[in-house]
Length: 408
Ligand SMILES: Cc1cc2nc3c(=O)[nH]c(=O)nc-3n(C[C@H](O)[C@H](O)[C@H](O)COP(=O)(O)O)c2cc1C
Image (spheres, rainbow, N blue to C red):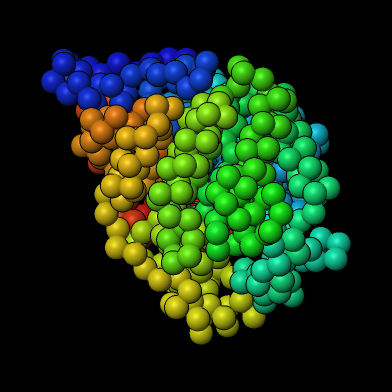
């Protein structure tokens, strides 16, 4: 991997920036710097298959200097998709993924794959029986208007099969050459639904106390580790808070991170929010409801967005490094490498992350806006991203592929 050099004595003048832009180990894998492109769903997998556009997107990020890019949301099984166009792991797509990995490696970056299961958030009407599976029987706010109003509680057999799906998907990622896998423990997806007291109402060994709510997510981690071995880093993306009353709160998030550390995770990416209830807690800034209505294909969903969009998708004020105050509490309690995420836009933000003891920084919207930001920060041409946190890139995912609306 090629490391970027900071020219002209800047490294001595700004040692924290130099640290952020210097090589670092993620597990046993070296990244050329500490900047990770976080998963932002690309909308470039027609029929659930990686397209050339997906390859170009990640090559551009790699060429732009990130240490590692993350291919977003790959479901571990067909029923792990929230909707039909999402990629799900199967042997047939391994050659296309392998081509993506090779193209990213040519540019000197590492590449990770985010593995997820949507749990009860299914809007996937193609599935036999229109299933929505989760920890408990719940109102499926996300799939209500698609005719999937309630979820069913998963039984022991389904839990074991799903853990095996995660392991098989990770093994496929390894065979495609990915440098790391990221398991989604956050944003209200399946493992987050098990962790959250709001959605896990089970009375068996998988529900109730946090120890019980952790049982299935940790079983998934164990199954993945057993398949990929110690050489492949596993990252957990997990919530600091779900963002609503009754959801997972920081005190339990600390215990979740401690448990992940004990279970041998290689790094933890700290996030927050629950897709069905607090979607913009994840991003902060304005919810682009007008644009979301424009791209929504279903007439019923368009109507619901017009009527209830503002109530369901409330805005949260954007602040730079918006998860830092909560993430610091985790930093105090674990030694495992931590990835700070949320509103990182500038070299000054990178320096703050380093001074607060974070090992890596993940960036989403800033790198959608400026895929070459890291290279330009390295050679002194850029101090901050042009991203305005307008969140209109969120609607672009469904308009043909994620992109920054500031581009023509
Ligand atoms: C267009 C878009 C798509 C996203 N898709 C995903 C996703 O597939 N998986 C995920 O974990 N987070 C997803 N996110 C959330 C980001 O990973 C990240 O948590 C959030 O944008 C905050 O980081 P930022 O302030 O650097 O953008 C998405 C965000 C955006 C803007």
